[in-house]
Length: 333
Image 1 (cartoon, rainbow, N blue to C red):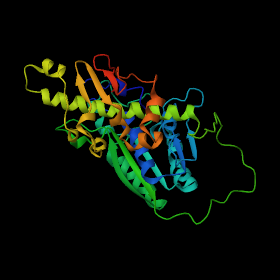
Image 2: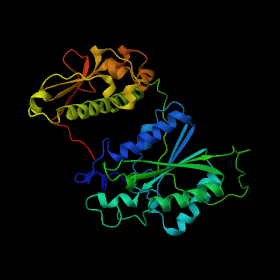
Image 3: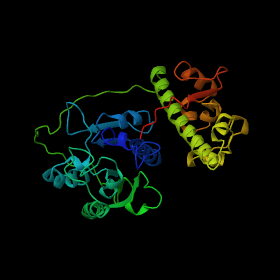
Image 4: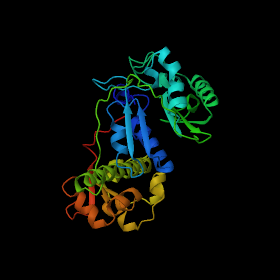
């Protein structure tokens, strides 16, 4: 999930909102929400950020992370594999493991000229980076050989006018065509362990107040950031072409909900609980955040939401809204 090396430097020609690695994480979270898998394995888990996000999904019973570097857990995905390892990858993943769904994300080399400072590869440890035709050729062959279907998509839209380069990160979603008749047959002879267990944890139920609070605070902040960014993007577009943009920004702004993202568009809320900007502060009413299904399911009641986040986030003086200072926000790219 190489987020740390180059994505934080995408500040010149190309920027991403939300940051590219967060878009990849959200893509996986959406798939988990759609298919409700019991087991999820992250091959190339790096610092386990994605696994930490998924551990509170109620459908998941087992999370497994695998990475090529156990000591420092640096970012590894498919483009870090040597040629000999890459040849074995389809057999191991699609043939032996044979999961119902496989999601593979990898850099799109056609996007690289738009990224400042990128000469050959985006990371010094990359052994190769594919263009779209190369990735799709490899993926289609793997899908054909192991009876999967595959669809191609990606995250990180290109700038307007040069859409032909495709997504910054290309993604292949593989679905197994036929369910397995039985569990894979295991050899009776003991075999030498291929992988080393670095860390193992059994997470308690969300009935435990401490873990429930962590889950709620994380989801509330994530949801609020989406709302905040949608609001600021709309405010910026409204101010374009006006000579008094600064004055407009300082006034209270209450846009209609249809200006927000697709997630926000699914909500039905009253005008009185829409987010707004006052001066350099964004106010996001807790009732708006509570309207999001994930937050609602975790908390159950609005009173429970307030209790769990009290002292963990910055609230307005009356406790009715989350507050974000625009000037001191340090956005990631």
